[in-house]
Amino acid sequence: MLLVRFLVLVSSFVLLSPSARAQEAQEAEVSETAVAPPHTCDASASPEDRFACASAAATEGYWDDALREFTALYADTHAAAALFNIAVAYQSLGRHLESRDAFGRVLSEHAADLDDEMRSEVGRQFGIEAGRVARVRIFEIPRRETVRLRFDGRSIGVGEAEPTVVEANPGAHGLTVTEPGYEEYAWEGSLSDGENLELHALLTPTPIAPHELYEEPAFWVGMVLLAGAIAGGSVMGWWLQEDAQLDTRGGFVLRIGG
Amino acid sequence: MKHPLALSFVALSTLAGCAQNAIFELHVRLPARDVVVGARFIRVQVQPTTASFDTSFDSGGTSSIELPMTASERGVMVSVPATPSEITSGLHVKVLLCRDEACTTPLAERWYAFDRVFYTDRYTCFDAPFDTDITMPSLDEQIIVVDNCNISGCRNSNTGVNNCTDGVHDCLSAEAIREGSFCNMLRDRDVP
Image 1 (spheres, helix red, strand yellow):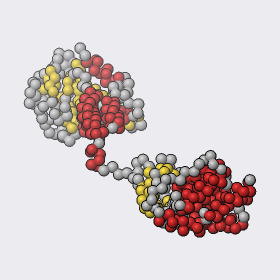
Image 2 (cartoon, chains in turn red, yellow):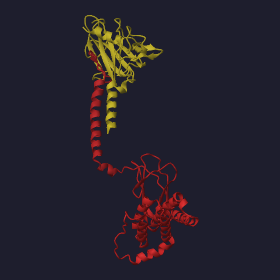
Image 3 (spheres, rainbow over the protein chains, first blue to last red):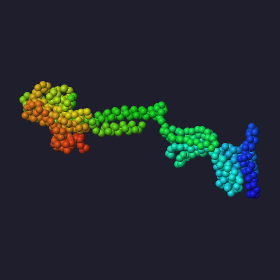
Image 4 (spheres, rainbow over the protein chains, first blue to last red):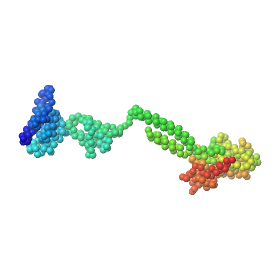
């Protein structure tokens, strides 16, 4: 039984190999105007049937459905072919980062399940996908606890190493480096396949524009308090100073040159 | 906004701590009436050291006072306040023996030259006797230069002399007090 399942998995593995995907994608494009129901496979079916179902979704170009079904199948069977097809699905969706990682897991976690030819193919695909992952190298991020780095809205640890490296799929992305009291560093742009982008996120203190200061109610409250303190202090200071002066102690008083 | 308030408080506290002026008390011993024939009044005048004794001190105002002589000798305390700008200036004092309050022609004079009598936030004093055998000496002889160390105050003492330590006046020492016992004693003695 195990042998039969393995053979089925291997046949699907070959079926969905990247070299065959181009033709499948073209076929899918021809019928893209048709609204087809999502490919949902029966989770209670046999692994072989679920594999065939997921493969059919892939064959028809429904890569999101195929990815979902292969992911579920891999969680249940831990089959190398399912993980391989997860990597292929990611690849087809342009998610090279996840694809590289999935191919890497095939090599590291399923080496015993692969013959030399398949191992070579997986290694080749891993290399291709690794080359497509874009990298953003961010220099000069201050190593302070209050500094926050966000990539595509997701918080990322700055780490100790310089520069901070963020891997990403090709496409549009946004990056911000923020810290209270400093101006936000922001970058938005598009990364191409395998691009290595260098950024310098040196933060500068936030200048306080005078007009912004005047618009703050707290500023005017403070000014009133300050004016009151100065006026009150002056009056009280004069009073205290007068009160503190030495007085003549009776008798007669003469003023110098008075 | 707490800082200006705190600074004001500190400044006020500092201001409230000590005075910026000074008081010099000149104790004048008035002779008995007719110690010189016809003498009825003593006139006391003060001017800064920029005023020469050779000139008249009759500037009017509050720099001059006439004290009636009595049948017996007595003492009076004349207070001279100084503003902060006057602290380090010296003092010239004329004590005139007069026939009448107008004192148009003094019968006799004593001139005192003080190099320094004022010390910030301190009462100081000097006991100025008026000789009973007063005559009208020559100008040079009339000027009595009072050494700074004979200005009392700033320490408790029974005498009015030797108010310096190693040449530095006691009012300038760290142990200086605002009112010395000798000045208080002079003043209390004049109270009827």
